[in-house]
Amino acid sequence: MSTDDLLTRALEAIGDDPVSFEAIRRLTDPGPTAEAMTIAEVADLLDVSAHTLRYYEREGLVTVTRDGLGHRVYDAAAVRRLVFLTRMRLSGMPMRDLAHYVDLVDAGDATVPERLDMLIEHRDTIRRRIRELTLSLAATEFKIATYGGEAGPDSIE
Amino acid sequence: MSTDDLLTRALEAIGDDPVSFEAIRRLTDPGPTAEAMTIAEVADLLDVSAHTLRYYEREGLVTVTRDGLGHRVYDAAAVRRLVFLTRMRLSGMPMRDLAHYVDLVDAGDATVPERLDMLIEHRDTIRRRIRELTLSLAATEFKIATYGGEAGPDSIE
DNA sequence: CTATGGCTTCGAGTGCGCTCGAACGCAAAC
DNA sequence: GTTTGCGTTCGAGCGCACTCGAAGCCATAG
Figure 1 (cartoon, rainbow over the protein chains, first blue to last red):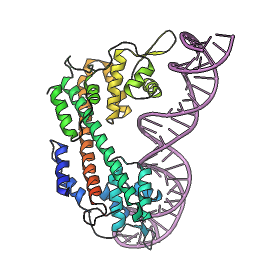
Figure 2 (figure 1 turned 90 degrees about the vertical axis):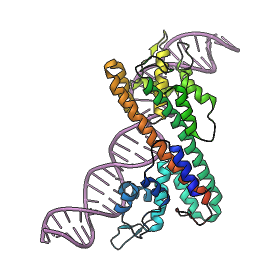
Figure 3 (figure 1 turned 45 degrees about the horizontal axis):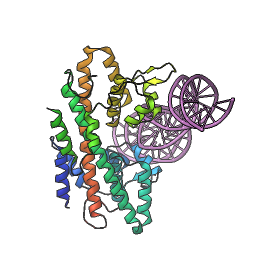
Figure 4 (figure 1 turned 60 degrees about the vertical axis):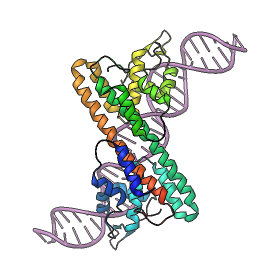
């Protein structure tokens, strides 16, 4: 399945409102390929706080080098990993699992199958969650539509 | 828009895998209309713990009467409200907002517009979340598909 | 008659993911 | 030369939503 297919499916599933170009670009664009970003730049790019970036580092999710002043220098690899990490966090993968995942990455190619297993399981978790939310959405829309009327399975509350 | 339309839309958005009849029934069926359920029965019905039901009551989300032994008796109204509450919780509405919502309900019909506003905002929140998850899903599927290869926007990690 | 099981209250504890504050270092701007 | 601003470390604190444990009451089963 090509990237385009995946994006097309994603867009179809999203429904009415068009996704911003921004969102699509973020999905497929590795972002600024410039080397050496500061913590503020990365925080801005990923829309997380600098506190959170330090926290992720403390938790062992990413290794960041320092410059002569002891300031963090995020190279392309660190930024790529953080893009991945924040994406996974956003979709609900727990810190614990991410920690395990990066351990596997650091352990080398032999762990690729296990990593794939994790990704597949996470994919299924996301799908389940989307399904749950879609049902809740339908229920909520139904409630909105019937509010003030008297018909409908739910009580009017 | 009819309930069927909503369900149809929901089912379409869900995609490949069929939703269980169970899920659809839960969405539209108020559930056992029998009066007077015990805490264990309600916990089982809603798939939450008895601890959680007591917690919701403590938080003022629902009022439950007692029998001669001091045991909780959940009447149809209480069960209906709890169905609503657990559905909203499942779709991510915070306890704080639910507390406010039930305050509005208890305050009478004059608060209907504000309640509708809350529901509409929540609906939009769910939609945003589905969109986020759909993008994360596409990214995850892409990563799975390209794992072990060398092409693609993400690094192979 | 006792034991089992389900319920009660109360308050404390847990897990997660940040989030913040204090105290400090360094450098470019005024 | 001091002020401003961005960075550092460390550890503590927080918000949320449960989750649990202890001690006790009552009824039905064996």
